[in-house]
Image (cartoon, rainbow, N blue to C red; front, side):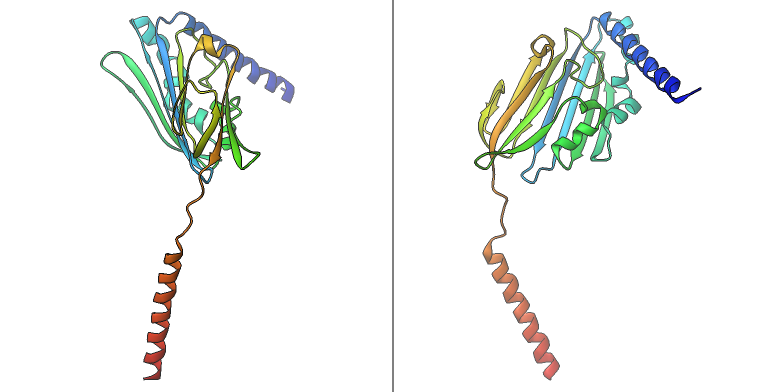
Length: 232
């Protein structure tokens, strides 16, 4: 079996798997809610919390949901893992009201490093330098917004960002200081949507000069003490 045949077989298997998953979702009477909360720090590092849940209305929905990778721990780890970010926690659980949840917590060195994870490969996450000491944040929400390749008219998505600066412009649906919220249905996302904001970064916290003065004073006292002890 040659390499081209192997690649074709892998691509074919993947397409079949996605097609089956999409077909299953067409018959679900449930809805899925997806929330992503991201905090970006002044130095560019940050953390992200993702929570999505689905409530099924009957036993048939339950059986179908079990076949979806979005509620399988191994699949979730695979989707949100990369060598450029750290996955802190994955928690999957069920409520008594037949709602299944997935919660993901991760840390990143830079927002654009998340583009290396399968879940965000099409998200074009970025924070770029702009004119007059400003920065521009953006994320593309593809039609397959969860990153797993599934779509449903009953899905809703909420994206919350805490940006480290004064917000100058944005296309958020709600804003409170530097907390921006974008909330969409699948219909509103359509063929894809960019969320973006321009901000002037907060200044990095500088060490107060009195800290250096005290440190210098303590060092001088230690040196004088050691010198006088040596003379004795």
